Amino acid sequence: MTKEEILLAHRDYLYPSVFHYYKEPLLIERGKDQYVWDADGNQYLDFFGGIVTIGVGHCNEEVNRKVHAQLDRLQHVSTVFATEPQAALAKKLAEITPGRKLTKSFFTNSGTEANETAILTARCYTGSTEIVGLRYAYHGRSSLAMSLTAQSNWRLGPVTQAGIVHAVNAYCYRCPYGLSYPSCGVKCAQDVEEVIRTTTSGRIAGFIAEPIQGVAGFVTPPKEYFPIVSDIVKKYGGLFISDEVQTGWGRTGGKWFGIEQWGVQPDIITSAKSLGNGAPIGLTVARPEVADSVKGATISTFGGNPITTTAAKAVIDFIEDHKLSINAAEVGAYLQDKLNELKEKHSIIGDVRGMGLLQAIELVEDRQTKKPATALMPALMEATRENKLLVGKGGFYGNVIRLSPPLNIGKTDVDDFARLLDASFVKAQSALALA
Ligand code: PMP
Image (tube, rainbow, N blue to C red; front, side, top):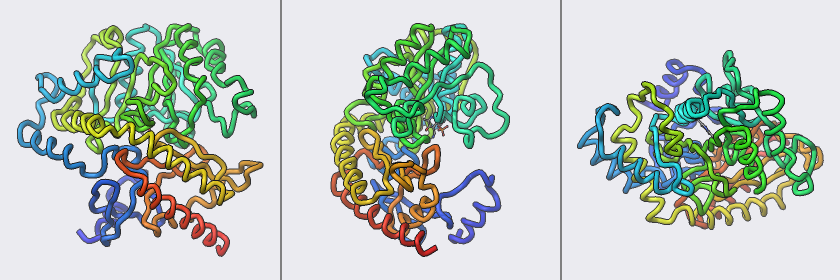
């Protein structure tokens, strides 16, 4: 197909909800490591990694070699038969979960399904149905996952699941109470108890949160937040579910999972995205006695598929062998420094936040009023495209640039990125001034 035919087919034969970045959709043809190339042969530095998914680089040779071999050996038999790739991945996961305490896995195909499975598990284990989530959260696109999600524009259709309530999130830059950290005493954490006591029966099945809220714009809670919340959740009989779809697999630097940065022991972890580096896999991993409570018939035909589990095991081995979570910490700190330098230069940058190679900048029209610079975003996205840089867009107000490059980049990539983003700011601001 020609480029025009592809773009026309996209427009005519896909749901309109399959939206694109940029005025003209960008047609990507191939990728290698931290780069992708468009249909005209232009090379782009990819600092979004297919929405926080390309953790070990595009078309990683070690991962692909193992996947190719598995494709030729066995592709699919379903979970009613035993296979080595699924068993090997589950065994490896049991060795790397926090405290080695989450040892039983259930595999699906997406983050949405991973969260569905986690909620089912918490409900089976506790006999309760009520779940506490956080405002601004994103947990997926099924009916249940949209109910857990707390941003109206991602709650499409009639979202009517009962028993799901939301506490305020720890969004320090826009504190829901108008307070400042640390003098606030992390008041937002107490809202979890307030919500349980006022809007549930007091016996909850669980609490679900992203350690760093992804779609919300990498909202990063202070260090006291999750320890306080974890104690509250325990007090009311609930399980702590850490949604690590974006924060897992070394991304936050120095640890396998984001929640470990807060020193909290979750009961269930869910993940997807970077675990497969592009292979569609969802993971729900739980304490054994928690997992054992799910006894009835439930099956995911593709879950634990030999191809995707081979990919996931190869990704984990690659991260381990190449010490990529250490690299994420080091290069991530360097990236954050560069973003703070850009903040000195561009008053439109209101906040720089994140951990490791999960970093964001929130753009504001005025640092005093913090009015979201939503109007600049389209011009800025176009400018990054013209400068051959891929970044993510997000945030509750649509004014956050999200950065999640592969974990195996180096500091020179960050230098390239900073130069391109700097130039993009200049270009976007002059485009806006001319408009
Ligand atoms: N949880 C989080 C934190 C996510 O960011 C996402 C996807 N953006 C999901 C769940 C849902 O994952 P998927 O799109 O694979 O269903």
